[in-house]
Image 1 (spheres, rainbow, N blue to C red):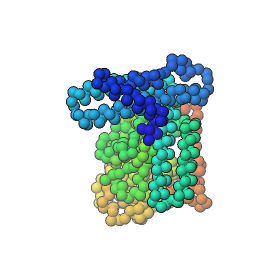
Image 2 (image 1 turned 135 degrees about the horizontal axis):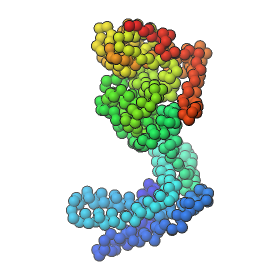
Image 3 (image 1 turned 45 degrees about the vertical axis):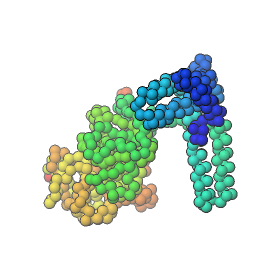
Image 4 (image 1 turned 30 degrees about the vertical axis):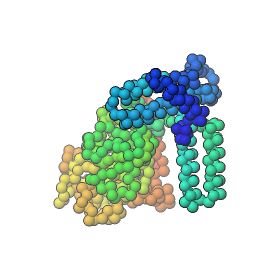
Length: 485
């Protein structure tokens, strides 16, 4: 622990002295290494009044860090050392009676150390934050120093360059010991409030939703949900990245199958009641929030405009899954903007014909369609006109026969009671994907997506204003779709 920067030399000396004293008494007394540490670990009662005082927070932090950090280091190192020793004893002796007695004594000896750390955490949470910051930064700097040494040994760095980098590392280490920086984790309310799904909702429905969120921190390689399992809720990704993979959706067509922070995952499955379309595996440390499917159902029933917004949010993710070669070039926010302002989401009734013009594509989100010489088309699926150049979407004609999520036909007929389809103009898709929407002559110019809250008769309403030279009117024939019956 001393080599790792977890404890100082002075703390190591105190701990080793307690071990030596306990070993002298081991034949006549139970484990007693904690007894000689008690004089170095104490929490004066008047410290509790500091936390409630009007003194500046920086002064309180400095005052308490100087006096309590040694006790925190001693307790944390004591508990960690005993935890390692108990595991080694268990591996060596197994479930013997002697091992059980010693392990019980070890647990009992650590009770006061745990109480001290808990008291510090409850009274001065910023103190533990300072100590963690110092330990983590020390570990990072030490690892950096080792990498520089390895680069020098392999000949990639000259000795002068290595010495210069080592001096910089030593300088940062001295700054760390002299004045440790305080790292603050963002508050849950701030993270959720900054997420596009939550921030766009009216306050009347937002508050109940936030009260039912469950915070999660997932390490690299953890599964949020797996393909084929029932969707139990949605995941709001605030920090980190998530990778998707699927057998049905052929993730091999995706060059970068990543959903970054700000994504809403699992919403489409909750809205449709379908099983999960793909595996969602964390690609980094991820801080996310889980909302149960029942709460989303209550949310969509609260207002038709809220339900329409949820369908748009889900369509942004589905578009990236079904047409990755096009949509993965856009950020999640750019995809949202395109879905909300550069597409048309239409509802069709049973028996209606959907005829796509040559430069339009659709994504079937809900309902069942029938096309000539094809099986029933179930959602989610890409709808193409028969004249579409498949290479534009990163596909080849030979692959169409092996993909049940993509169909090409002259027209599609609605088989179910209703069908929900979102329509995109191909030219606008590629203008957005290539980042040309702000250039002169670009076919899509959505300069503003303005969200404003207006209070009217005690209720808040979401008003979206779109300034665009080319607008797609919902349900209009100019959206590239011809309706028939």
